[in-house]
Amino acid sequence: MRKPLFFEGIICPLITPLNEDFTLDVAATEHLIRHIVSGGIQGIFILGTTGEASSLSYAVKRKLIEISAVTLAETQLPLLVGIGDSSLAESVALAEFAKAHGATAVVATAPFYFDLEPEDMQRYFLSLADQIALPLYLYNYPKSTHFNLVPEVVRQLQQHPNIMGIKDSSGDKAYMNALIEISKETAFNVLIGPEEILTELLLQGAQGGVNGGSNMFPSLYTQLYKATLKNDFDQREQLQKLVMQLSEGVYALEGGVNSYLKGIKAAAAALGLCKNILSPPLKRLNRILLIP
Image 1 (cartoon, rainbow, N blue to C red):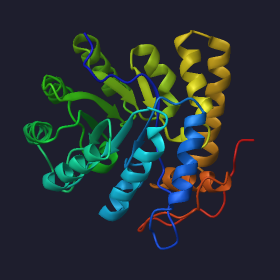
Image 2: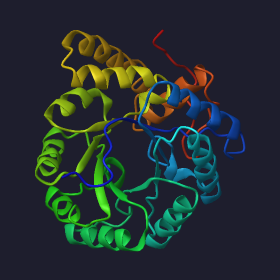
Image 3: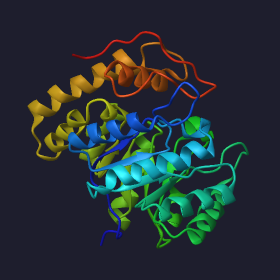
Image 4: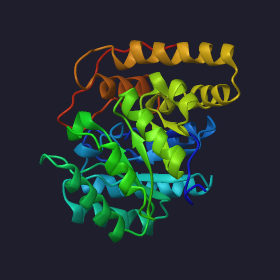
């Protein structure tokens, strides 16, 4: 039996539209969400890596929660809110704020800065899950936290009634397959971040994707998901080529460690979805190549 909260399909990890003074661009946020919803996605995830959450002020985070919840209310789509922080107390406070404004679930990385042993991660997430009222999704992103949530820890954590699934952005296929095996055994929800390998992991048993390109082209990703589930090989291959062109021509355009974030914000700006402004310490990309 699946856990009560179980997502399938494409969830968009929302970019955070900003003004020149790094406040939230409210009008652009509302427009962006409506654009994404029009493409048939199954939910929105705010305050993740794509949303530059680690660089945003708490005031901007709270404003984004408020605006996203109101804009999504008319659609009845789920709203997932990132609450990852180096402070457990701040994560709990943000989760409480998200619940008060109608969020569906929260998503958390392990706290960054300190090196953590597996037992530290397990203890942290159990404490977090005990203290919050919303369902919790784990978020594995070793590029930023510098360690994986090891499969055995995930297996133990999924037993908690408030821990529903995991969003993995490691890009490690062996690790992802280990998560999928846990999912098959326990009904744990596994969502994949890297869109370049989404179809491969869906075929292995993952249930959905949290893919940044859906900010710009939401219907591309929802169609790719449907084609994969229908075993429509020709359509899947055609759409996969477009996803790879986006990855190579936008995310990897500048190169370097933050090329993805610079590329995706610049691409969204070129499409008129937001301004090409990133929160410090990142600086914007001044050129972009878009797929017609």
